[in-house]
Length: 376
Picture 1: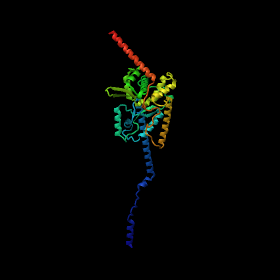
Picture 2 (picture 1 turned 60 degrees about the vertical axis):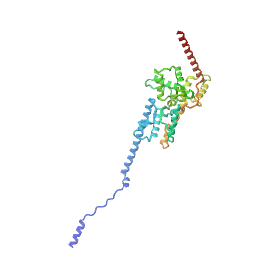
Picture 3 (picture 1 turned 45 degrees about the vertical axis):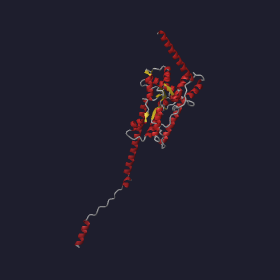
Picture 4 (picture 1 turned 60 degrees about the horizontal axis):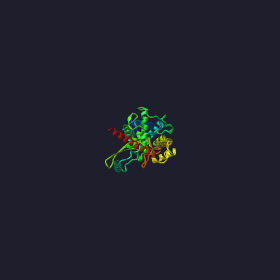
């Protein structure tokens, strides 16, 4: 009897083994409400950071475009990569460029327009271009690499009272510079083949009293500035006899900023109503000289630019909603076509006047020479 009690006491005194704990699997942890909230918050922070980074890149690109246009320098793709995206990747270039275009149009009434490539004029330039094309055949890209800012405002808002010349350094020198490069580009456009000899350009500048000085600066210095900013290009080519010929052609910026529309507007402003045949005769001569069909007016150009800007904004909104993206600068504004090859003629009356002036100058020089011989 006592032995049984002792065994029962030992059995009751021995501790029971602890209950086995069940390990929580990763799936059970993820399914908990706390972990779901943490994941959602992390995704929201990531999206906010991405949106903030995109906005900062857009602002940088807009500031760079405005600064480049202020100094009349093209906005190049290499500058965008180095000053906007560096040191990050340029994978989101299309999205940033499209957003910057929208900001420029809605805030400043401007748009980035692609610059055409420089024309290959001389034989050496054409051969070099052919070699480069052969070496990079299959890898060539048609995407633009340089842009400038152009206005999208309608013609009614492009009056000098609303869009005056820049005030730096002062408005007067800038106004004379704008008028001079428009005149020079027009003379080259209206020359045969779109190429103007140096002698002919000097003669045209003397006619407008800009042969040696313009706006307090030497004409030669102003022409170098035009060449540096891309309005004109000076081409030197050595002929078979060893003589060097110098010609001027329209540069990329001159084609976009002035273009055939600007040339037509200048000619209309100077010669409207003063030629035989009136306006219709002038329009026919413009069509013949510029080598194109019916040349539109500045009003038409403004309306087309405005319509195109609205279409671009609608296209970008569709892209943001899930549509495809287009290569930036793929379309050019209407009326800004490149200089076309072919024969271009100056107005016949102007040619006759130039010949008469040359003859008069030769007669005056001969008369002076005779007087000097008589004095001797």
